[in-house]
Figure 1 (cartoon, rainbow, N blue to C red):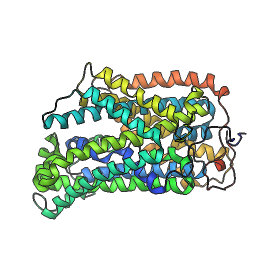
Figure 2 (figure 1 turned 30 degrees about the vertical axis):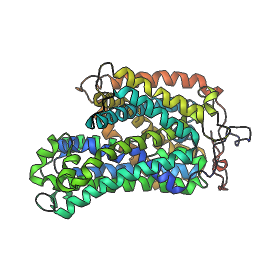
Figure 3 (figure 1 turned 120 degrees about the vertical axis):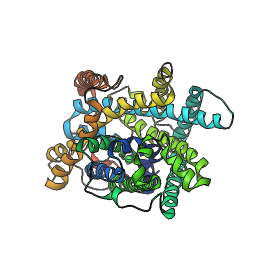
Figure 4 (figure 1 turned 90 degrees about the horizontal axis):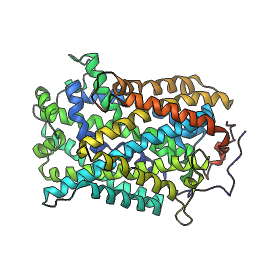
Length: 476
């Protein structure tokens, strides 16, 4: 039986974030601006005109997973997010293992985004005649974001607000301009025809891989459970609502892309290096120079939203003594996990700077983030299925639909991108990632087994959230 959080334990700032703050943080983590910019053509090469429907299918699956994690947040919110969910459902050893796998995955994802920030910014500066290598820009950007995050969660999340709204409004405006102009050949119904005429199952599956990857980070708001007044109400709204909004944006924007190029010209879209930029030039000329700024704000919003969220999981691992306790320190004035934030953000610089020896920034981004996404998928599946185990262990009333059917379906959706990540015949370094992932799970599993008994009890669910007064459920 666990004990409740005591006053002597590190405390994050209560009541710092509203439900809307959490909603923006979660959507920023998914980074729709740069996801659309970099993946629309790739998905078109697999599914042709059916990009909107592909996003609809992928989004429906991710929403199912989001519902399961929202239910877990309603029952037992925690800054530890998926790592704590695994502990409540499966116990201490698996939670240490899962937490380390998750943090390694997020480390790689964040490192990839840091590289993308430096490279994209360097490219924008080069357009106006200023040539600076992307590496120092990456370092400066990461350090600036780190400073903001340490200064206060509300400060950095409000900055994220601004960045996210810029990308959201510009993407939306380009899509509206395309539709108002009637596209290249009129507003066709084929891209949203559920018959998928002429599309094979293999093409749809490959398209689903990239579409599903566009939602990675959807659960980011969960880590702020201890900094919002009523997490049991706020987190389900933020997680499920955030995914729903981004699904709608992806469907709208990709439909506009298809009709903007023309249903009969889908090959041109698939072969374009910057299809969204081409759309802006054709239908919304004044917005074209702003689009690349929107991609930059999308990257920065992701850096801060993801950094904030991931650092809190690392903080919780320190609080449970699964990793060095110093990572659980809270800044006396700002009430932020400043050691965890600084350690995580500075560590994200390492893979990118090493990768720059061999690869350009876009290649480095894809190669580093590819491993991170694979590791994150494994924990999405494990944490989602842990809901069923937790409800049974806690002797809570088991409801078949929310506690069994939804978690199983929510975990199953990740099998599609998981297969895309591990299938044979991939190029290097993706061909070695499955073996590297297995090796990390084995090493972390051994560490988790040895470390489990030294971890400390975790807070009862009812102790999380200043406005919460629900009865305490037992935990492992």
